[in-house]
Image (cartoon, rainbow, N blue to C red; front, side, top):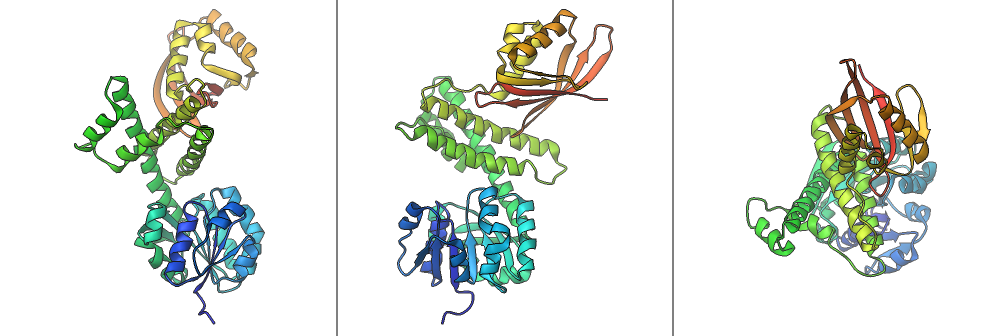
Length: 400
């Protein structure tokens, strides 16, 4: 009979989950791989392992249960209000490798405790090849006792293990790691785009920069992520990458920090990468590249200052909404055009943009507007954008 702690179930055999499960099997664990996708399950052909399409069956036959699904929603659906914990049983331990909301991990760990199940959240960094070689970097959250039970698993897959605190801290550590990675990808892709637009050869410039003080992993990876791709599936690969990174940027935007300016700078760079991937997807589809949201905001202020209604409306998408501080709301291009034209005709204030904050939820700009009587009105504009980089929602708030 296998000793308790050696029977391993692993749910989610994707690009990261399958290599982790293979590594565990190669290190002597009795592994059952589980995925609801028949294709993913069929590809898990590691010798001396079992396969199952049923997460509950997998949990019942496991002492340690790993999970690596893509989204918060998939994780919640999988755990199914505690049915997986009940199947795993008292004394079992769940090891979460998905990158999800830290608060969700905390909530799920609390639920697990009601069933006597341990819970460890383990963010992983390094990719599939590192997983196979046991060379992952691990960001770990959990109690000392739960981490100790998971330790043979963690030692098998990782070379650098940082136990950062209770459940939730593993997710936070991984999100910080991912945010700086995505921000660096965005800046690296941007600087290569600048160079190409100046007439440099893309590959030659990248190699030259990587031979100097600009060298970094991101400079090698970021620009490659947005290279043109051909074939029927090219647009979908860009969209899949975009959605994966966007999830992490959105979760990172909720990190509990008072360093708002620092976080805003990182989020802006992350959004730059997301915008660049959207552009690559549009180009792969043969369509027009979406506008950069920051460029749209700049064009908005230029149009307001010039009282150019056509230029202003060019900043809006197809079904926009415009909301004022007094509660009035205008929906649709015709209504918004009439509202802006009325302001122009009455002598609109002259806006002076101040601070600008970029996040996955849009762009926020603080404004001081000079009125005709010489007074100053302070407002905040919150812009949200559609997939083409045009304004989908503009809400104006009064300040002061």
